Length: 618
Image 1: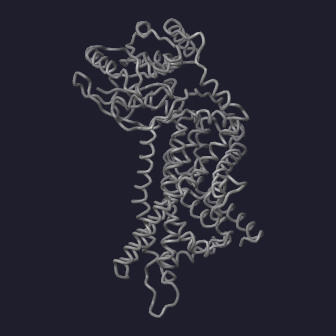
Image 2: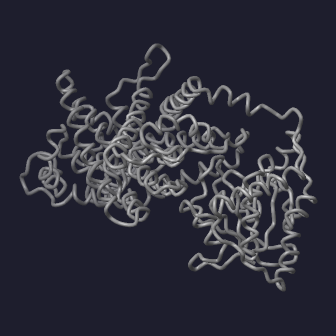
């Protein structure tokens, strides 16, 4: 059997998918999380092998966005290389049935066997909502089951009915009457859905208002923005305050490992490669894992709690003034982790011009790959002290860098709207606010584990391969006999760095920084590892152990600030550019993104460096 999960965003489809298949998929508490095809397998009580696909959330089969098109084509059997579903499970939030019942009535016209799954039934019951499932099944003409997917409640009944439907479907022939609905058809369908709900659902006289009470505070136009700012501020303070002990532990571990290699192996290329290339290079990136985990911990907790949709609502007016659709907030927030899933998440935006604008500015969000660069420079040049007695100065600078990224994204969006899309008015922003829920520790743990694993795999593959390249360039050719100065001055890396140095000299960058920027195109974190390798080869074991202190003696404060400004706008890594090319259907916007970010990075660094020098920081 081939099954499909269909439903509106936030109805719990992915939770049901996990309950049926045991698959460890991400479960987030805001619309738009499901942008990729997810497939799992299970066995029914009668022994039928079944596959199930978790489709993107949709409100209709009209196909107004790429996400809706994916769902429509799959259900109708139009998706290339996909078998049409033998059964469609329409998943509904039991506390909010209007749009799902309308969607189900539209799904009936496709001729596919259907089952309605009333999910989150415990929340509905707790609120005093009563649903007559038998009567609803009779009026809709489809089986109806209740479930609490996060607890696997109702799964046995769902599987039993799946077997029943499978037996009936082997002989049943259904007519496909689906066609795109007009506005009048949608209104008529909604009226029919409301009639069915009116006869099968009873609402309490005094509804539970806990969500309303909380929203009265967190959605206040002034207090809500202050709370959002406070949440982000606490998150970046925690990046330094909480992560420091674990970072020191990792740093000491890599230092001890490097010392072991130094003491065990004889001096030569092998010792240099292991100590300066592999351990110093890759280790200088892995030590930032605790900070990345803390960032993701906050994001996952806020997602599960239900705050992210509120944040999108709060930011809608600000983003609308900059020419962005309110739905852009979720992709842009995803880009704080990595621009790639953020760009892919723009598929939830209906209008192509809104989607294109979001894709162009998503790379300006401060992704986790920038954290190692920011942390290295801030730790080396910004004192570890408290401001006003309770605010960590380093955390405050980190917060400022993130704020600069957000501000620049809004400014670029405004300029795009002013110069390119002047005649375009964004569509109204409509968003269903999910219920507040206590975060599930298992879901949080799986999410953090997945992201930590991705970071470590990246460190062991992309970053390691770049470190091999950097070590080779920094070690060969060997200096001639009688040569003076560090051996690296005679290497290929030095030749490349000195050749490009005049282009970056106005920014205060030396040739070592230039060498680090080049492999940083593969992954931003590589810049930190490259600096570690270059300065370790140049300065020996002490430089490998204390790269931050070495930078503080080699660079001026103006150079450090200039490099921070560069990385706010730094041209994207190659994988992000490839995703932009794929999502926009050509190389044009990929090239535009690279060029405008390079120009912004160069201009920001130039201004920052010269202003800093003027104030005596040069």
